Image (cartoon, rainbow, N blue to C red; front, side, top):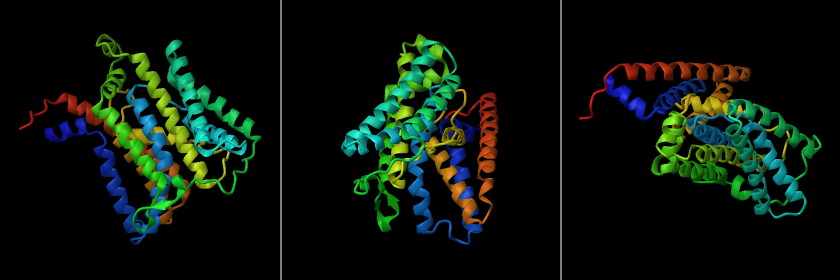
Length: 327
């Protein structure tokens, strides 16, 4: 038992992974084997990159001890700016860069205000949520602009892999996730992020540039949200001003279900991905099981609360016992 607690402390995402396996088995049984069919998996994995990118960014920011409630609005503004730029005649790649720069600017403002005026990031980003959403509606006129029919977005939207199981966007998501995981596990920056989220005063004493680390995490979180929104708009071929509404709460839920501590300092990129996959599986599994889809938010909310309670209990219990030394 003590060894199990030690493993949990080292791999907090394992609880979410176990829940993922259980839900997959339940939905597979209730759908009479249709849940894991190639067509259904194509649907699950095809939408995963969009919420997954946001979840990865939110997870890293939460590990750093901060929150960003504006990611859903950034998810809408960045692709809206990209789309309007394309319509104005700017080529695809520069237009995407412009959208990502705008997303990065939102993250910078969030971080700058939070750190300069020493106010909770919850408040800063809550205000930014409304500001950015309003800007999205204003610059669009309230209606989705029409993208060119010949826009070459296949690098994000076409199906690839065995049997066309994956969208190309999944490969982008995979690459970003690997890079983010490498930052968190192989670089000093990852250690700084954990130290800053775990104990800010101790991190500063050790010489960690806490302010720059937090600012980096705010910017990264916003850029990943903007990139996820751009991918979704290219998939839908329509930059809707309302996309991403409520996504910030799903991303926080994904991070928590993946083992990220609300107090900071604990969590992994893989955990954020597991949480995002859990949300996609719950959403799809309820439909495949012929359960009213309105239970989706209930299920996500319940699992989020249970994850927080379970993680808190496991960590308290692990601290209260003397862990066995590795053999």
